[in-house]
Length: 138
Image (cartoon, rainbow, N blue to C red):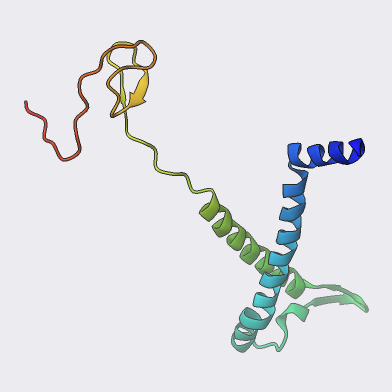
């Protein structure tokens, strides 16, 4: 029973479980994007390019030796689409919240919330914060 508890602690502490989930989801996204490329994008590209299946395009060197540049270009397209999808997902989930308004304490130059009436670092009493919509009188 102790071994199971230690293993559970390891999974939670080292984020191994999150990494395993990320790998599984990454493989699923790769399959989805590959299907998207094969079933939607490639037929459109096939209409534009003269060859029927451009992923099989190759430069024959001799006999069975060939440079399969069509396959390479297809993999590059797959990678680009997967990278774009991952970027959009990560950007969506890791978007920073807007930071609260702050101001600088005139005594110690520490950053304090804009609505603070006393500095947390030096306990200086701060001038009343200006309320939103008020104009300053000069």
